[in-house]
Amino acid sequence: MTRTVLAFEAPDISALARTLRSQLTAHDKVPGHVELLNMLARAAGFRNFQHLRAETQARHRASEPPPAPVAPADLARCEKALRLFDAQGGLVRWPKKRNQQVLCLWVLWSRLPAGETFPERRMNELLNQHHGFGDHALLRRELVELGLFRRTPDGREYSRVEQPPPPELPALLTLLRRENRPVARPG
Image (cartoon, rainbow, N blue to C red):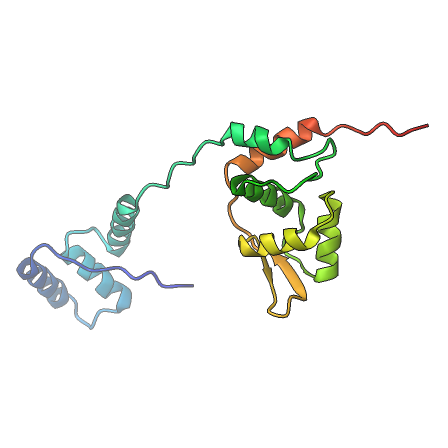
């Protein structure tokens, strides 16, 4: 079990010394570890060591900055990115604008397996399943440069880097699911 480090502080060191002295003289033997912790906590004005620890942890939680608010998804950006995908959700063409490229890379990231390490050939196969413009090398390189995938120095193995996605990703994936419709097969 890990030990929580607590800072010890007393408003008046003279009062601390007097209270601690009176508690120690009331004992007929040397106090144990827990007894000494309780004595120190009482001398600092707490009921016991557990009270001191709870107050310190609450003060620490209260001093932490609140979590940053989640930015709302830019739905216009999602609508523009939606045009880059076909009815089955495959990426049809590589966008010119960087912010659209990044969003498309996040879509690919979400479709590739997490927690696995796979060779370059398998990475290419997976990417080819999700795009139709025939440049898996571009996509692979961009995924690594954006930090969404990690590759070994020799480029033989790839693995997905887990991280929180932008707020547009869930919105775009929802739009892609709505647009996903079966293709009519001839004959």
